[in-house]
Image (cartoon, rainbow, N blue to C red; front, side, top):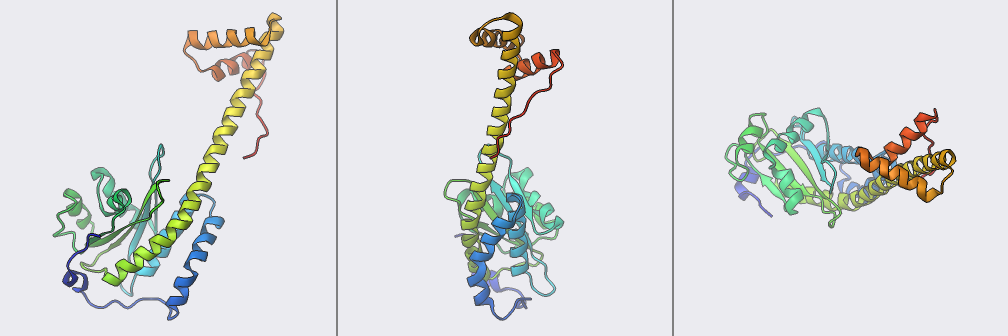
Amino acid sequence: MQVPAAAALTAKAPKVRDMPDNTSRSEAQLPGALQDMVLQSQDIGEFLTGLAKLAAGKFSSRGTEVLAAVTLLRPLTKATVASSNEQAQKMDEVQYPFDDGPCLRAAREETTYVVADFRTEKRFGRYAEAIASHGILSALGIPVRLEGEAQAGLDLYAPIAGYFTAEDVAAAETLADEASKSLRLAVRIARLADTGEQLRAAMNSRTVIDVAAGIIMGQNRCSHDTAMTILKAASSGRNIKLNAVAAAVLQSIGQEAPSTHFRG
């Protein structure tokens, strides 16, 4: 874990948390609360937004608002970014032109990054200067481990240098570890939903092709194989996808493309 010197971690006034006295009980209830968030969320983005807001509330103190964001990197999909508010989203997006920052590194390397002061930070090149120009001086990048299914990182930002203590780092890692279990479930649900959409699209395409083949069979009094050969030849000759050719056949007789009734 990459952490600054202990002196840098504590070089600030003590924080007064806006948190209840029953913190230990709240921590024990965290896994159930996160699982409820997964089940109650409409999609993975909504769950991640809930996680970001939970983290921001947990680490903010009286007079100092912590901004939180979560970045999810999945194969063959764009990054999913959720934030505790609009300002947090803007701060997290500062990373992307540089393709670097504590959250991206935490997600990719599964390593915790602690930044005590971006004004003296050397690990992130020009990104450090860019984020400091927005008034963000310290940050945490915490990996949310997903065991190869995707990569994710939790980012916490503060306007005060040395804001995050060693205890904060440990608490953020605990939150990320608990969140990883629920996020793995959310990713699997999202993958199943994506698969269902792909299957529905494939079945709709197959239905259009079958109907078009039937029309050709009726018009030409030929077999199904011959009708498919005609469709494929038209697709190849015109460099158009087979389902587009089939849809054109339906349109030529004023027939709308049918849809299936498959439910994922």
